[in-house]
Amino acid sequence: MHLNRRSEKSQNGFSLVEAIIGMGVVGILITALYSALTTGFRTEQLDREDIRATQLLIEKMDQLRVISWEQLTDPSITPTTFEASFNPDETPALRQRIRIGEGAASTNGVAKGLTKYQSLVYNGTVDIADAPNDATYSSDMKQVTVTVQWKTLSGMIRTRSFTTFVARYGMQNYKY
Image 1: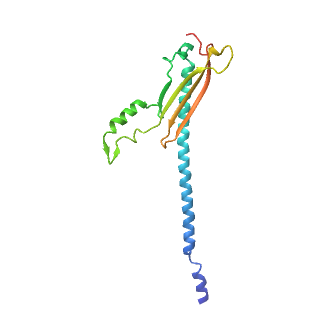
Image 2: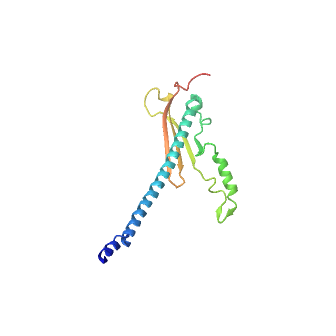
């Protein structure tokens, strides 16, 4: 009977080494899961920013498509710069004014309202230049490049642009 008791004792539980190895494996799995979730959320945010930039580029191109040739070539009518917010319902100038007003008071060393109004601002430019060709109709064509640049909340500067050609007698030359 004493021999059986000794074999039962060795099969009752895990040793200290086995428990430490098991905890190490679980720790590595939890770290990998956290890293995957963080990377996924960051990628999703970058995709949202890209989609908003594309929306702004398409919106500006559509605006330029429906104006006349005279309006397109007049720098006082066609703006060369624009600003837009990540949230389409938010005006960047209004957001900045609110942040300055609320930033005067602070609570626990943090400016009041700083994170509430912190959002992405897209800065855009519209470049209208002569078409890069030597054809006889080159004076009746313009190359339009719309560029949007923004700084992510993590500090990375990103840029997107569209380029197209507009002709004097193209589709925008219609009469009302």
